[in-house]
Length: 262
Image (tube, rainbow, N blue to C red; front, side):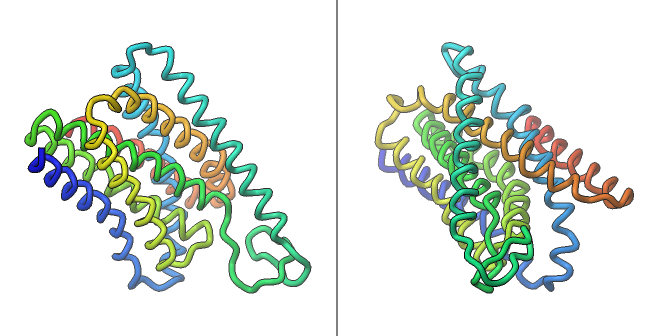
């Protein structure tokens, strides 16, 4: 059991470190970074839709003893993130005081710092749920055997790389600075470590909840992609840039589809 725990913990630390892939953008100038953000938003939208519909929902349906529980968990995820976003908007509005202009929402505020849009926090929370689930899956795989655990870890890493790039872009788009986005994204990724430790501690007794959590995470991704990312994409009116964003969405979906072949 000690050997399994070591393998699982090292694996999930490596998976969490993938969230630091955004560090490759730190050398980019702000102007260049914001030029490619609109593409990353498209990739992230396609990735979230694709991940939920192609990967997470079928996986939860296959694993749940009562498949009818999957739609319930998906709807619960959608409603949870709806309520969460309402709370974040309420908190954002009630933090506004008379003074200067918010450059994003044209609201009057007193501080000079660029405000963080609620979408940024939604992405972090949804990603934390997903990472927590990945941690549980990694633990469950190592409890089966070390080779199965290693194969699962590789699959998770391949899945995380494009998602983390998209998440980093969304955090920048939501108002985080590059270093701040890198830090909070890494903290969110550490939820995978918590999931692995909990999975190892509880063993197979906790595994029955994993498909429900996966479906819940799928609902969160569907909500964010549909209510936050697509409206952002629709703000682009230029036909050429719109075509690029459409191709970016297709690319994000394609990446999730290709992961089925891994």
